[in-house]
Amino acid sequence: MKENIHPFLVSMHSLEVKIEHLTREFRIRQIKDPGIILLDNADFIQLFKISAKTAQNWREEGLIEYTQVKGKIYYSLKDIKDFINRHRKNRVCSNS
Image 1: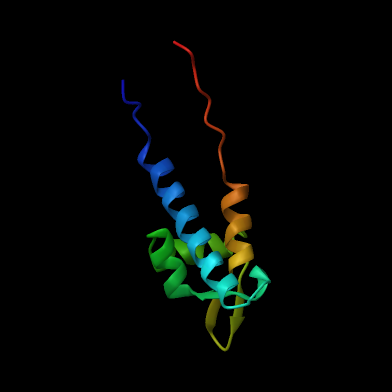
Image 2: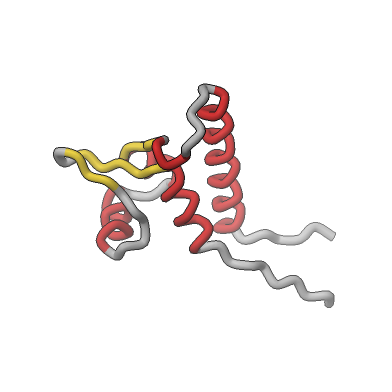
């Protein structure tokens, strides 16, 4: 019997896969430190499939670390991974 998986979990898994792909790409390019790999706000919004207002709310609530340079917002790949890990929920499996 196929198990129903909540769409949010599918979305989070998709994000993890995309981040791992980005990490592999940058490793190939000899960038070792995920703290120096930056995504701008548009990339972040697209990655999470959220609105600009949601991204702003997350920043204001302190949910995601970011850097601002002359009005432009950047997120390090390390901070995005930390954000995902902080919000990861363990799925409880029942043997029914």
